[in-house]
Length: 112
Length: 113
Image 1 (cartoon, chains in turn brown, red):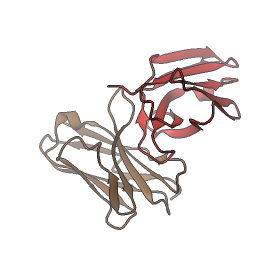
Image 2 (spheres, rainbow over the protein chains, first blue to last red; image 1 turned 180 degrees about the vertical axis):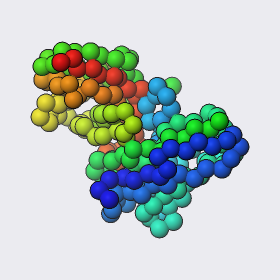
Image 3 (cartoon, rainbow over the protein chains, first blue to last red; image 1 turned 120 degrees about the vertical axis):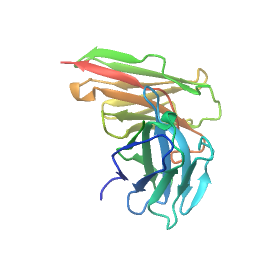
Image 4 (tube, one colour; image 1 turned 60 degrees about the vertical axis):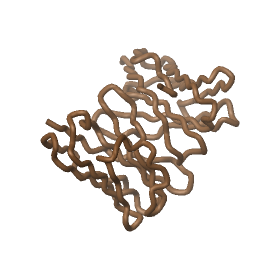
């Protein structure tokens, strides 16, 4: 596709459950980012991949959050033992060669 | 600790007039600044950026001004159009366009026909 694709677009899960969010970046983009946006806030950095490796994971809030990008393209953000405070829009973005970062439409996660 | 601040939550302007959106930052290491626009239920869309070596960058109706001594930047939209109504986020990074971005909380712009 032409843009960053994220699935699911919406996810409602029960507290304590495990969730996976998927991101398919723009073809050829080597850099991939995950951000989280809570209500009334700006996007907050979580993790940045350059190729397959996590170049900066300083934004992951705790060890319940983990992300992978095994083949340097698609990435999965994994959240264990979800809490109500994890409810937010999870945004994925990609870029190539120091150029503009392009965002997907986000995955809306609601933990009930 | 909010390193990028957009202190006004909303702005309303008349169509055809100028919109001025302000942003302040506290981290003197920031060397690249961006504005993103966001419509409801969509991801942020890149609008315009500026490197810290410049004080102005212009792209059509959009101009960004950077005042490093004041740690302040602003986005000017002229003339404003109803389609410009959206949430505008200011963002900053250390090390260029594809580094980790620190965002402000956003400002909601409404352009009245």
